[in-house]
Image (tube, helix red, strand yellow):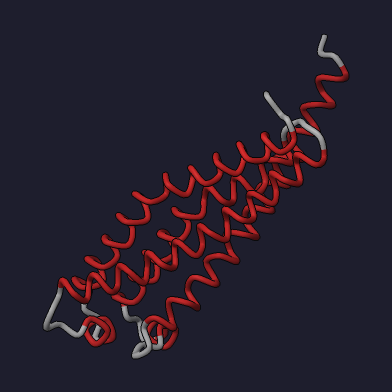
Length: 181
């Protein structure tokens, strides 16, 4: 026979997990929105939304890569933001963990946007003699795919570095509040 305490713990775990999904979704959507708006500022000669309305596949590919890149980089920050509330420990430890998650998420988002900006800069240098923004506006899918690949590759590589930020903040919180577990 299953103990009532076990069922209660399982129920609480399910509710907390669903809450974590909702919190993660809100932060992920916010980060993607901010990322696309900032990316729009990086490409001053292109109105991405207008290009999408026209059916510009190259812009669609590039925006998808921006979203994937941002999600790849910030995933650790979103995880660290919500994790403290689903483990044990004192409230002060949980709040420090949450604050560390917020800091990591903000740093991760800034890093993702920096990566996008640097990828565009490096791509511009690699493809000397090509006006990338004009090519994208014209729908040059080859340019979009190459830039998308660069964005996703860089984001994938630096993601482990942003995960290390979360580990560092967790260690700091443990040191501040004496959690040796």
